Image 1: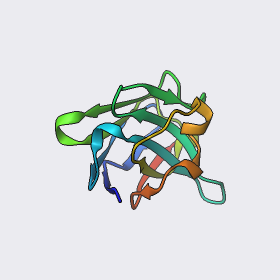
Image 2 (image 1 turned 30 degrees about the vertical axis):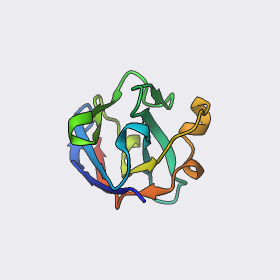
Image 3 (image 1 turned 90 degrees about the vertical axis):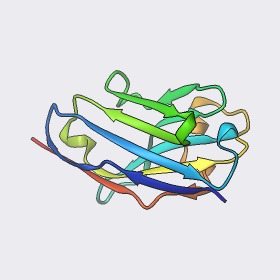
Length: 129
């Protein structure tokens, strides 16, 4: 079982930036998929971005392409989500999630909630207009 610890949320005005971090432990980091998800009040949790830690392939939801970047520091077993040009609709609780020994998947699958077996506690992101 993978343990995940998130940090970096906060409150910013529209157009601002934030960096979220997700530190992973407890399993072989280099074979994981790690995803970032968000959930706004009253809405379902949705995939924002994902990365295959072994090859570095990245995946993004259309709503964040060009504004968010997912990256990793292999030495620290940490995945980052850099969020720029933030909009009020980006507001929500952000969660990182991981799947060990990540199998081949489509872009839609890897951004799906059901794929992931380990979840962090979440960090709040609030963007004011």
